[in-house]
Length: 305
Image 1 (cartoon, rainbow, N blue to C red):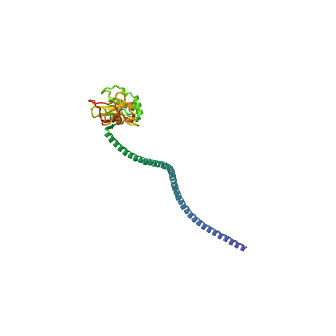
Image 2: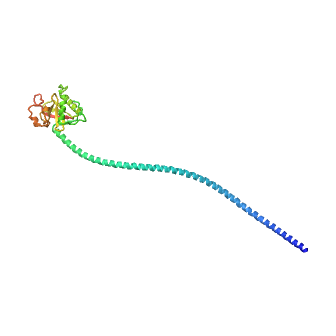
Image 3: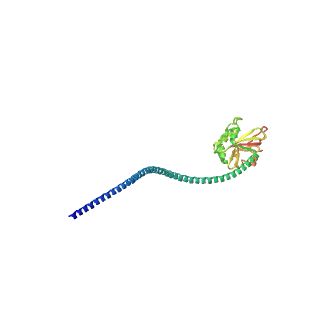
């Protein structure tokens, strides 16, 4: 029995010791846990502070990202507009390039025409020089024949009306015109309707009919008076003088230092109109005399075309 009591006390003591140890151990663990919890709470506080800072940084970064996205959007729009502008500019450049090609072709054509024209001008200059030389010679020849040539508007005694489309006639065309014209039938009235008016009207009628005509004024070596008649250039017999002062119409021989002679138009062949031997051989002809009855000698010939 005694042994059982001792054993009981031993067991109870051991249980008590175990409880005390457990209590001590539990107290120690509680302190450690409290210290660890406190440390963990510090870490959590620090982490929370870092998280708050990070959150603020992320918020600021989000704002920057939003701004950057807006900038990128605006830049994208600008790039789109720029692309449209570039496309339009490219199209304009292509159009301009095409126009430039066309203009270059036109310029080349124009240069070719200019070269051709320059060649033509050179030819014309040579022709002009030749014509000028011939004109000088012709003028000297006319002066040698006692002939002065003027334009119609310079005619001082009557008004001559020219037809710009008038042409030189053939001998037969001239004869046909003279046959139809009635100018020679006017009444001769000195200083009212005399040789000046006869020659004026024949000139104007011929021009109106499309035949080029001239008025001719003659002055004589052996008389103070003058005379007016007409001239035509026939395409087959050359220069022909026609005197229509009083009828009938006459073909005249007008030559420096030669006496004035005329014959009925129907009695003169075209080939004889300027033949001095033929005129000199005539036994009957029309002529004008001076105050002493002599035949008038041509001293000056003025032709108005």
